[in-house]
Image 1 (tube, rainbow, N blue to C red):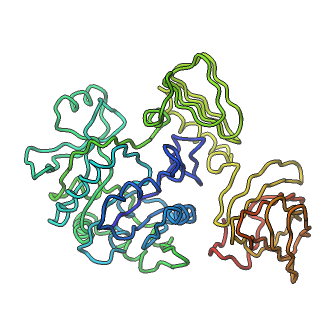
Image 2 (cartoon, rainbow, N blue to C red):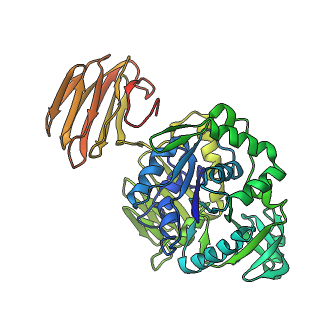
Image 3 (cartoon, rainbow, N blue to C red):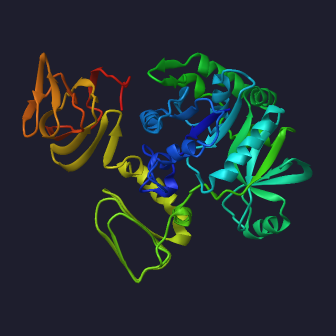
Length: 468
């Protein structure tokens, strides 16, 4: 069986932690591991797994590769979507990339919480058997409340082992309808988790959406491969219909079966949902970072950078990052997306990037910016290299504060250690790299008429980047 990691979401409802360039699946929200890592680690009890196939936005490629590498996993493929087209084309790409049509794909969204792994693994074993028999298997979460924020799966009366034939997929209901669903016992929350043979999925897709399958085949055939990544052809893939697995196939096929699952599932789709799955103190508060709370109950309080103090609050969400603070009552957290939409309309960077920006070589943090000058703290991991580049509008001063730096400046190569510095004049070809075994930390002071990140002309890059 081959895990397929779907990592296309932007997680805007968990802003300001989750952002377009660093969405929730790459964050350690409920444990020391990120959600992508948890998605794979919870499968460790299975013995018959192939290397996973990961599908992600091309902007997230290095985070995906590095986070899997950190837990000892090298995927068989990381397929990069140039534009988002929902889950059906993504799964089609994984099915086309599978080694054989009989290979069972276990399709897993990368941003879900499963609190109890044992029943989940047992359900996967059952799903594999059903998939090998030619079924398209989905996992239906046994509902615990009349939830209006999820789609539902209705089962019919025919039972096959621990599964049921799917009678219908149902849109998000109103409260009265959700209460009736809960009472009937015939409805499950739609988890978005699937298992099926690659060939079965492709045959059903050809039957119900041949245009999608044809375009996916063309985009994959025209894909470029660099490093560990498969870059789909943007021109072709952009013409692909956008649809979910549910709409494209599962609602139309007669091969759909559902396995009921009770494993502490949560899609962590909002701050209140994250509060639900986070450990709490005696007052019901979920707290992380430098926080002091007085006479405060049932709240989620997170500090990334500064001391956060809360007094006399109840059912409140408070989230602080280096460049933003968000405060909301728990019953209004679905409206966070409206803030993100406003930021986008205003062209503000806070909608998509953090002050700390991650790169394949490490990260940088913009600590000060003013007219014609900017100061950054740059951290380069061992062996990391920035691209060989030059700037048309700015010069740079680098001061090494920790570790050892190897600097290329035109034809020179200069080794710098702590408390040493170097000047890079405007228009000079240069590169910064870390030849050491510990992290390199550099303070960079930029000076010039334009300080945007697009003022980079790259001549050589170890990570295959043209930009970004």
